[in-house]
Image (cartoon, rainbow, N blue to C red; front, side, top):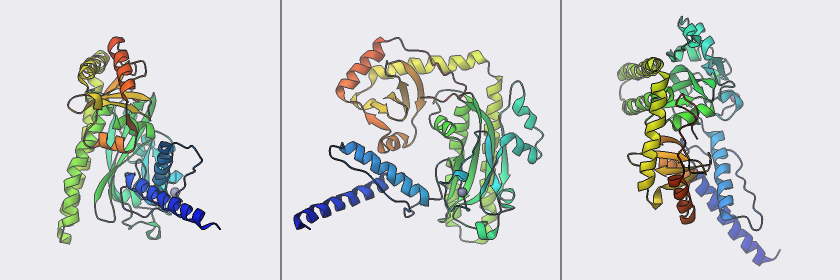
Length: 382
Ligand SMILES: [Zn+2]
């Protein structure tokens, strides 16, 4: 073979290997596990570099997902030794994690039935004319009672301490349940994993900051629990004596009970609000602040949300607003912590160029902003 060609091929291979490593690094990998899947991109002459980068990122995410026990929205399946199999997620949107089968396969059950199985006589209230949002703490014992030792019962790969099951919240007119699981990993860190359908995860991530919807309150409750659990995780990692273990476990369950309580109490408050008040809270404030923020936004505050196909304007105090192409305000939400950073890194948000920005601002400022058509009852926001 022509050695000049070989040299060029070598350089290309090296460049691709660099691309692979960079893509792996760019994924929000949780545990630093080695990737197991095959990394693959396809290139043909004229392919824009951006598309190659996107392929690389998607492929890297798949590779990592197969080997990582912690995957967003998923439980770890000991039967398949991955969190990327079909058993790792609820098949129906109203299901919660009901425990492990003997072979380590996750078992999912309709929230209503699971409450009945727990002997919770409030289950009927889920279907009352004004349904209540119910939540309940479930301990490790029940979830692993059937699981065999040889199928992960005592494993630290994904060790479930306990969980809160809750439901129903309505997203896109569908009743959905969620499971918030407290899990220990190999490094003895404690994590809260939220297991829920994609729609619900997305709606929770985007729960509007100023809205008083049930979804927003669930979001806030989980956020509070995460904060408390981070401190408890540090205690657990640093513990020196077995005697301390029971006390730390108790603290963790106090947080879980508080989480269940917050979800419920807030759910009931939600029921007492009149539809009109709810509507007003969801319609007026965001639209008003959206226009204000839009007027004051600088060049760096405009993005396109590639996942939802909307235009995003950053406002003050962590606020953000989504608009459609015509410049109508769709919804407002809070971008807290490093969420903006993460969305930029995943390239979910891409900055608008100057021409796009000017045209969009013009449309949005002159056009009549639409009132929030989705309402605030937990419908997924764009
Ligand atoms: Zn499986």
